[in-house]
Amino acid sequence: MVGSINNTAPANVGIHALEFYHPAKFVDQTELEQFDGVSAGKYTIGLGQTQMAVCDDREDINSISLTVVQNLIEKHGLSFKDIGFLEVGTESIIDKSKSVKTVLMSLFEESGNHDVEGIDTKNACYGGTASVFHAVNWIESSSWDGRLALVVAADIASYAEGPARPTGGAGAVAILIGPNAPLVFDQGVRATHMNHLWDFYKPELASEYPTVDGHFSNTCYIRSVDACYSLFTKKFSKRYSPNPEQLIKSEDLDYSVFHAPNCKLVQKAFGRMAYNDMLQDPENEIYASVKDYAKFAHSEESYYDKGLERAMMQFTKAEYQKKVIPSLYAATNVGNMYTASVWASLSSLMSSASDEEILNKRIGLFSYGSGSAATFFSLKVVGSTEKFRETLQIKTRLANRTKVTPEVFAELLKLREETALLKDYNPIGDISTLAKGTYYLTRVDEKFRRTYARA
Image 1: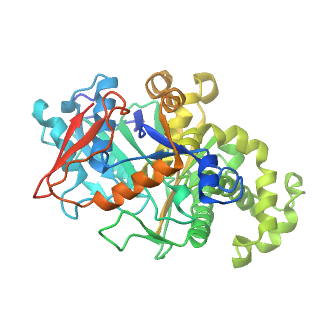
Image 2 (image 1 turned 180 degrees about the horizontal axis):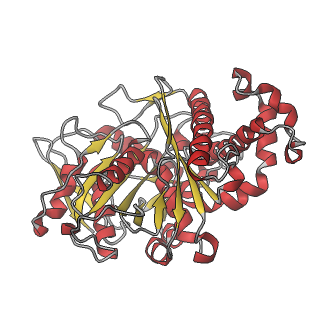
Image 3 (image 1 turned 90 degrees about the horizontal axis):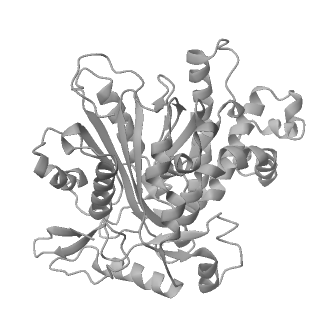
């Protein structure tokens, strides 16, 4: 797996390894419903969320990134000398100049490897995906020197008190990319849609909390599904189909993986893919139960009609259980992870699916970042995925977390709110619950310089 120096053109560029990090604490969404005084099921059914990760003042974007990188290197028996490209996708900004990538270079000191390209990439939840594309482009370019690329997608998602707070979470994913990989990126099919929107943004630089219009942002997400998926079907069919005029459909993708702000939105998005398929062939008998909704096409009304939304979710219910649910375990039990979200979903799938279930299968992925930037792309599983299951073990790891009450959850967010940008500060969070190998903040000095230790 380790890339030795060579001058041959790389083939089968893709993912060799994934590592997932989540905080050690969580809050139960059913208990949070009761604490917030909302109707039962508002978060668990309405949003599709079961649990949500919680961070105190001991964790920040640097610490969770340090943890996920060090764990990946150790689990896969790599040397930091093997890495020639390292890029971080995040929107959790704690310094307007110094990148998280430069903090991660502290891990490379002992190896003596300072020849590592890449910095940080930012656009809401899309930065991790952009960094993955940059890594692939580096390997496929004349600049590649034969080494591996490593991408970190990491964020701490928290919200001010109000309706958006239960859609928080935190997590980090490290993605090891190189040639001759078991998960290969399909070439020439990335379908991107970008435009200028104010659905979610962070203008208050002294606060972790975003300014967000939740309903509008959900609509922007679905619009981007339409644009990206429609373009993807054309690009994919032109490149890979024996009959380019016959467009690929969602049913031709064995699994679908999504950016997951909440799991209910993912279900709506999967239904929307089938809606796009139906618009291409509305008289096909398989669409008999929903073809009346073809009248909406991609009109403005189609994004707000609840009948259409419910009909497509019902139409795709069985396929959703088979093709999407296996990827949502982390999202359901950790919450939104911003840039890490789509990659945590891929990690969930790879952690649970057997070789028999996933070998030679194609995975469609949709990544969205507010503002907005979105891409639909695909992977094909061409090799054994045993190492993914062996190292990820997401269900087991999530079962070993510590539950906190909603009262403690609110107190921890308040603590982060009050201390996030302090200098000359010693964090007070409890480190006894941290998993072995977790980095944590020990000190912010009088010049805002941060130091870390490892549990």
